[in-house]
Image 1 (tube, one colour):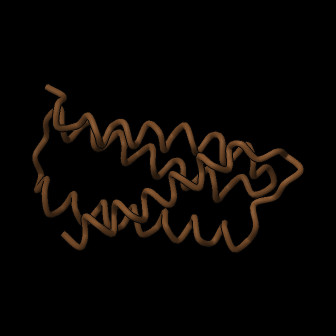
Image 2: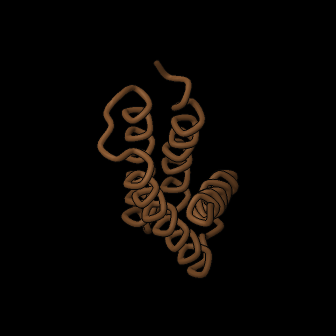
Length: 114
C-alpha cells in the first residue's frame, strides 16, 4: 500500500504541476526549484511504478499489461522531454502534459481492456 501511495502521490504532483504549467505564458519561466521538484516526482513515480510492475505483473503479458506498458513509456518520454527541453520550458510542459495525460488514461483503463 505504501508503494502504491508513493506512486500515486508523486504522479499526481508531477502530472498536476505539468498540466498547470501549460497555461503559463512564454514570458514566465519554470523556476529551478519547481523543475527539481517535478523531476524528483518523475523519478519517484517511475521507480515506484517499476517496483509495482515487478510485484504485480510478474511477467504476465496481455492487454492490461500492454496498456500499462504504453502508459509507462509515455511517462518516461514525458520526463525525457521535460529534462531535454530546458531552453523551451513552456513547450516542454505542453508536450509532457499530453504524454502524462495519456499515461493517466492508460492506467485508468488498463483493468478494462480486453
